[in-house]
Image 1 (cartoon, rainbow, N blue to C red):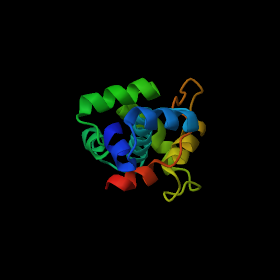
Image 2 (image 1 turned 90 degrees about the vertical axis):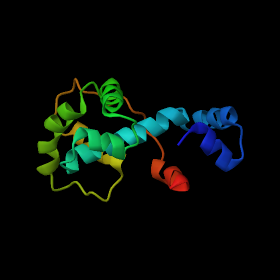
Image 3 (image 1 turned 60 degrees about the vertical axis):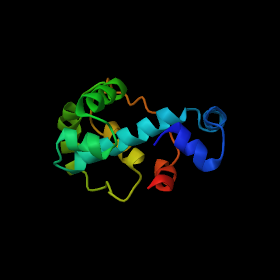
Length: 136
């Protein structure tokens, strides 16, 4: 999914759509989509035994190296390190419900018992899956 495809769907100029989106949500469409894909990847890392490469493909990253690089840039750890650091917290917390928003799950997991040096850089974002549904 590209900015051009989204703009075409709404019959808007891509630059205009991106400018309006940024004014409304404080982030660009590209950053929003990347953050949403990474939130889904985090959820899959914690709830499945899929290989990192498979999760990257599931979350629409073109290859495992790019997925790992983007994940580490945004989260300061690799996907494998993230899984190792947070999987025990996820599995031992009966209050987490897989029916909740991915972004909220990830935020809760990161707040639960891990060191404060790990900071999520993704902004608060609106529901990505509503927009994504337009293209599926």
